[in-house]
Image (cartoon, rainbow, N blue to C red; front, side, top):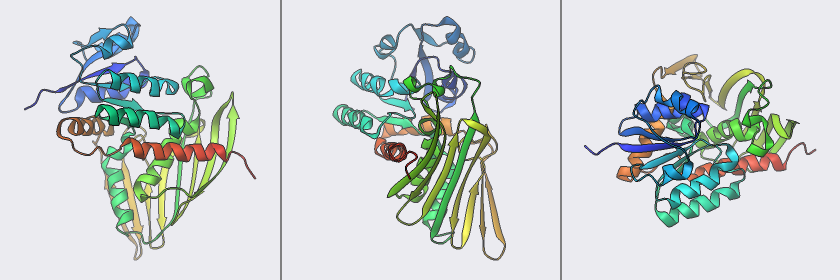
Length: 324
């Protein structure tokens, strides 16, 4: 059996400590080997579940570590492209937290560097690794609910009391669309395989970041509508409504954190089917799929070109902001 892929993490982000670093630690064929942080207190939170962790006091030092095979980047949004490029230049594959770039054009330099180096680079869009999304895609594209008419979704939470959070700061790439619009937009694109033709948006801002966005769009074969907000009671749901049936997903984005991962399909004749995935961790699945692509050349489920398409839709939403 091959030696496990030795992962390094750039920065002691809370999300990395609570989710991704633990997923790396739990994934088959992977080991959480090193963390780059100059803050001892942050390092202790990671050492609590990985006592053998090697600590570097700078990002550059971790990238220069010859015993690191792959790097995860959970830095603030505006730093993602810079450190993705530096990681690839250091000769290491990189998994970058979403959104990888603040505009679709930002993906192009990373795609070019990926192609130049021949190394795997990807955005950490974890939901496509979860079987509930693969099931939804298979059902929709097989015609299980007939021709698709409407896709609608909601993703909201309330962080108005955390004004120092990077999501509430324009200089760090904050806002609801960069943070969670990637899920409502990207999931619709993933399931249907279609791209938006036109986008309309109504956006409310505070401190220069969007805190509420109602986005509608025309796709080639269906209508789309979504709400994202950082100022509403927590809710998440995606619905795919066809001529002969409807698919509902009540915990589409934070599976087994917000709630149970479930999919319900209702069709004519009072036929209702429920599917549940009570134990799947999509972060672990993401790490394992990244490893399979690194080792065996298996196509990665979420290439940069797909992620660029989601960012292009976000760009369209901002360009159409509050237009009549």
